[in-house]
Image (cartoon, rainbow, N blue to C red):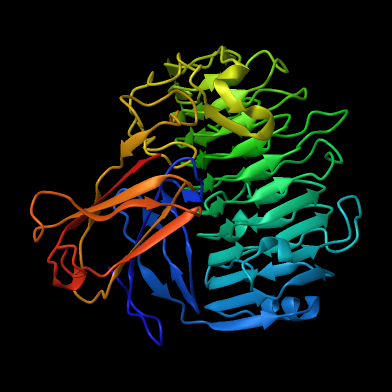
Length: 524
């Protein structure tokens, strides 16, 4: 379970999970948390097993303090390089090109990260000459033939074309863009391109997670969007916020557009505020091949009071799941979700289930889809405070509460709250949590390792709520024993180091053959 850990880093097994309504960054059913030890990062965690693995990067760290040092570090990067940018504002005069051009015999640049040294994305700003200025650089970061490249914890802004371009034609794999603030680009903020003559080379298994993409005012023209991805495969676009993708005179491109034969994209837990068009799989025209195959659009929130187009759109897609989204357009367009243009194979555009909207779902241009349990007449009073981007259901949303059926592809909600909270899941992106609640979490399985000196249990919590943490193992019998009772959270993160053998009758983890099961209950 643990990779070898060297130096002064103590081996520890971490368990983490969510308590509503706190929100963190997710990838499918996974999330990421940095460990504050040099060169040590917790890997992705499957929430169903709650197991973390700690891995060591065998790379050198390079700390840069000027634009010239940054450009030099990127241009000369070798495998396993961690480029840390000191706090400051950096005027870029050239494109940061990561990786070589693809060739049939070439090898990709691998395991390189570019991130803020402090971890504070607001403290490290890379900017160009302006979004209407055609001077160099027109792109800030260009990712070519690479594997496992990470861009994290930065602010990128003010270029004519793209803030980040991932060149799918260079065959990159596992690109991660996480916790980046992107502001004011002339075209799409994150562009994933494709050589249509060689679609076998394309961007695979990427992640765009926890980013804020916004215009400080309005878009300079219609040809823009937060994310525009051609021919991608296996990407996850998760827990991002897109804001103000509008133009006063033209209808801009979708905030999130995935098309050109893309496969298996998961778009989940994103918040789109005042975007003229929302999430689109496939482009609005007939093509000779399907524009998107498979994939899921789930637990997203689209909210708009300005004029625009539909909130979620499927165009010549095949078997896409559209589940538990909340789309509120406030009368700015006749329908909230659409599916249009029959797939080339004749298969359904997708399955649309348990979406909560204030306008109908429209079938267009001979497309077919399966629809189940959607509500198309949601009222503003059903939500806590939409004007402040709080879309939690209120007790007045009775038609939506406990009205869905559990879907295997939707194990939790927008906040990471496991579904269902009560007897059945709620319709829409967020579960209703009564202010006077008491709820047992699911069991958390852990296979213990004798080399582990302790178990650090950490969870995102609600200040003022009391938690009881329970544990059960073969040594404690079939009954769960309280590890800690009535713990009052005072912060958004709570943690407890379980050493065992502390008078609570619970064995030390190293003495326990496992499996150890953990449970969390909470009440006000």
